[in-house]
Amino acid sequence: MTTDLTARMRAVMPFTAVLGASAVAAEPDRVRLRLNWDPTRCTAGGMLHGGALIGLADAAGGWNAFLNLPEGATGTATVDSTTHFLRGVSGGHVEATARPLHRGRTVIIIDTEVRDAAGRLVCRVTQTQAVLR
Image 1 (cartoon, one colour):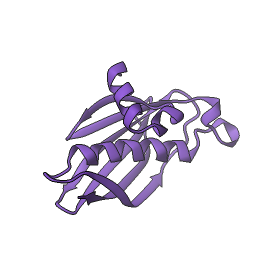
Image 2 (cartoon, helix red, strand yellow):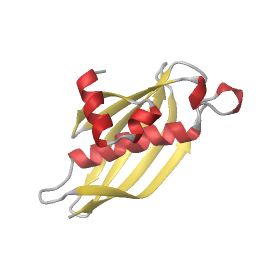
Image 3 (cartoon, helix red, strand yellow):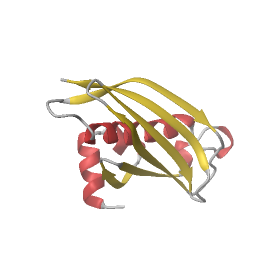
Image 4 (cartoon, rainbow, N blue to C red):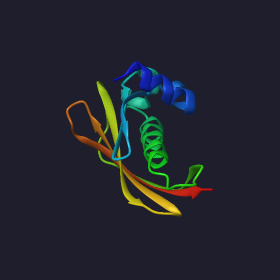
């Protein structure tokens, strides 16, 4: 994790600071964000809340889409997001890795995997981002 990259992310996406996310890497082919397990981010039974997982994945996907904007575009907006949860997380951390599936003129589709500290798939998110001009 880089402190400078995390600071830049939080300046552009303030919700990532509220969430407690840290930036690991940000390149057009891959964005990686990390979220540590914390009891304040949990639901019943000490499980990391699904909203925290989706928030992390959405931030990673949005950043990845932004890094893949075509020339002349000003930003993106999520128009569709599908999440499949596969397991709970009761400790450690999770990392969201977002990669582009499609880099188009009008939409960008991003696939994000969220894995736990052991590398097990926790959830998978596919987002469609509209390209704004």
